[in-house]
Length: 71
Length: 371
Image 1: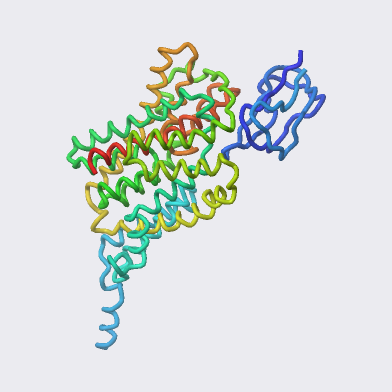
Image 2: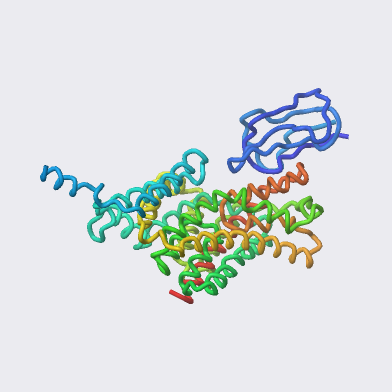
C-alpha cells in the first residue's frame, strides 16, 4: 500500500534526504522544510520503499502538498 | 596650567558618576547579548547604545526641547507615532490563516493574558501604584511595542526598564517556557495530534481585519491606535492589490522606525532613573508575568479539553503569549520532543497571533480604567 507524505506546513524545502528506490524505515528523516525561520524535519510515516519524490531542494510547498510516496 | 584645568572641566570626564559607569556596563552587556547571543538584536542593540549615550555627561542629548534623542523620544514615542507604525508593519507580516483555520484557538490567545492580570495584582500588592502595576503586568503579554505604548501613557518613568525587561524575556522565551510547559502537561497530553483545520478562503482573510477592527475598537476604544494600524497593515497584505504598501510596511518602514524606537527607549535609562531598588522588582515581576502567562494559556487549553471531544494539545496554550513567532516555535519543539511526527508550528501560530491582539486589548482595558 502506498503512503503519501503530505507537507504538514507551508514553507521552503531546504533538503531532501530520500531518493526513489531507497529502502526507508519509519521515523527516518525524509526532508526538511523551512518555515517561520525554523527548520522542521519531516519524518517517514512507515517502513517501505520510496516510490516517488515530488519536490526538489529549494521548492516552495503549500500545506498538504504531496512531498513523496512510500510503497 | 589653569587653562588646561579649565579645558578639563568642560570635558565630560569631570562629571562622570559611579552610576553612569554602572549604566555603561549594563549598556555594554545588552550590546554584547545582542551581537554575540543574537538576543533581539534589532531592539537591544539600539537600546543598549541609547543607554550608553545618555550616560555620557554634558551631551544634552535628552534635554527637553533641544536634545537630538529627546526629539526622537518626544515626537516618536510620546506622540504615540512609532508604536502604532510598528503595528502597521506587524499587521502586514501577520497571517491570520492558522487562526481562521482553528478559530477556537483564539481563546488561548486570551488565556495567556492571565499573567498580565495576575502580575498586575501582585505588583499592586507589592506597593507599586495602579498605573505602574499595569505597566509591569503588560510585560507578560510579551509584546514590545504594546509595553512601550502603555508605559508611555501610564508610567513613563518606567518605560526603559519595562521595555528592556519585555525584550530580554522575549529573547529568553526558549529558556523560560519549556520547563513550565513540561511541568503543567502530561506526556500523553504532549503527544496529542491536532485535527486538521478547515480550509480558509481568501475572502475570509480580507474580511477578518475589517471585522476585527470594527469589533475590537467598538468594544475597547482605547486600543484603537494599535488595533487600527495592525488591521490596516493586515488588510494591505490580504487585499493583495497594494503589494507596494504591504512591502513598505513590512520592510522599509518597519526597519526605519525600529531604529527610532530603540535609541530613545534606551536613552530614557539614565543612572538616576534606572538605578533604583524598584527596577529589580520590575525585572522580577516581568519574569513572573511571562511565566504566569505561559501557565494560564496551558491551563485554559486543558480546561477547554474537559468540555471538548476534539482534544487540543495543551502545549499550544503557551503560544498565547505574543512573542511572535518564538513562542510558536517553542511549542513546536517541545511537542516534537515528545513525538517527532507531531508538527504543531502552524497550529501554534493561531494562538500566537491571537495573543498579540489579546495583549493590545489588555492594554486598552488598562488605559480605559486607569488612563
